[in-house]
Each structure stands twice: as structure tokens, then as C-alpha cells.
Image (cartoon, rainbow, N blue to C red):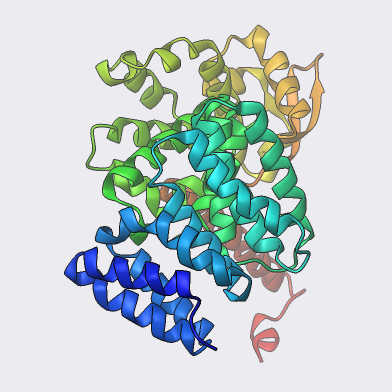
Length: 389
């Protein structure tokens, strides 16, 4: 088969006018298309797209060439190409229309669910930056249902979905949903692919959402994630310290940071002080329970809880009831004796100081067991040497 005449004219004319570094690609496009080597042609397209100089040529390349054989192209590669091309269109409406062609085309292809989700989410991104929040939300919901039904999907599809979803929830100040989706986005990409600036921005946004998110009392996944290290040597290092203070229920550290100039320059945090204070009290309660032995947890005086959490004794009952209702702890309250019995505390990611607490507790338990066994041996009830054999 001979190359379509219109395609030949386009490729030949563009090869002559394009920058020198791009001309060889147009020659390859024509040759591979003529030989029906669509896989190799797709690979050449992928290389071409990665070149900065190719940006102004992407939309014409699709319109005049790729659209002629797009059904034979790997559909995921096609969507990635069209996405890159759409970003060169300055007008958001035209950019969205360009992407929507693929969304509607792929909607009719049941075997291309992954590419459809990718195209839908990239279109949703344009809707979001154009302040079409309702349209973006509908796209997220549609794509989310499809993803939930797929047993496996390419990481680039997941990354696109969670990136746009996180951006939407950030714009809506829905902190828990942003936190969840932002972490899932990071699990779908390599940190090496993110710039230093983007790492700091994402770590900053995640830290704020962890602090301000209603119901977020366990952000150990963020504390363990290397993205948080990007704040260490930045102007937002204090925010990282604040996260660790919350995780360990450190009232002194929180008080110090909350009076710092960096904190006071954050109106969002300053205006949220009542919420942050209550959240810290709850996390201090969890830490207080965690540090104690099983026996001590069975009868915790209100006075001890008040001391650890920095709340008045007459407010302890309300604090504990709040923790019970949120599922942070399990147990019961004795209002007459003013004690609390805790049978379970929500698991959390531990810092070194908390790990040391567990180590010391295990050492104490081991010592107690050894003392009891030795005592039983002296009474002739146990023979340690025989047990060892």
C-alpha cells in the first residue's frame, strides 16, 4: 500500500520546514507508515513527543497524520500523545475539545478502559483549572467507578486519576480526601520524576491536610514517606516538626511551634487553633495510653490523663468519650471513681522514642517472667535446665 497522498504531502512539507533535529523523525514516520509497521511507528512518535522542540508540531501531527491510523496505535500511547499535544493549546476550551475527541471515541471501546480513564482524567484537569468543579467531579466519579472494576491498570492511569482527584479535593478544602488521594498519587510515581519544588509543595500540602483533616489521627504513612524529607532543609521545616509533635502527642513542642513566626504567618492554621488543640489532646491521650502497661491501662485516673493531655480534670470525661466515639480507643469510663479502663488503642506508626518504649516494656516483661520462673524453680515446681534440654 502506498502512503496516502495528503499524508505524504504533509510529512514531506513539514520535514523541510521543521528544525534539523526533527527532520529525521518525519522521514521515519513516512517510511514506517508505508510499511504498516505501526508498533515501530508508535515508538518513534513517543521519542518525538519527548523532544522540547517538537511541542509546536504535536497538534498538526495528530490532525494531519496520527488521526489517520490511530485505531492501530496503542491506545494508551495515543492518549499520552494527545495529552501532551493538548497542553500546547493555549485556549482551555480548545484544549478540552481536543481531548474530548478521545474521551468520546474511547467511551465506545469496552476493551480500552484504562486509556479511557486516562483521557477522562486529563480532560478533568482542564475542567478543574477552568473552575468547572462540577464537571471535574463528574469525571472523577465516572473514572473512579471504572478503576474500581479493573483488576489491573497501568501506573500512569492511576497516577493521573489520583493527581487530578487530589487537586480537586485540595481546591474544595476536603482535607481527608485530598490526603488519601495525594498519597495514592505518590505511590503511583517515582519521586525522581518530581522536581525539587514539586516535592516541597506536595509535602507541604500533605502536612497541612494531615493536621487539618477531620478524622485524620494516624498519619504515619506520611511520616514514613521520603517526600516529607524534602521539607527538612526548606523554609517549611517547622511544619515537619509539627507533624512529629502531633504524632507523639508532644504538647510542649506544639506550644513552642504555634508561637513561632512561621506558624503565625499561616492564617489557616491560626484560625484552626481550637480544632488543632482538640486534635492534639486526643493524640496525647492515645500516646498516654500507649506508654502504659496493660495493668495501668485498666485503671487510668482522670488526674493522670489531665496531666498528660493538658486538659482540666472536669474535661477528661468528655475527651475520653470523644476518643471512644472516633474509634481511637476502646474501653469504659467509671464516673464515680473517675477512672478510665482502656482495652485497645488505635495502632500508629512509631517514632524511635515510641519504639524505645516498647523495647523497655518487653525488657520489663521478660525480666518479670524470668523472676517468676526462678521463683518457681526454687520452690521445686519448675526445672529450667530440663526445660532448656
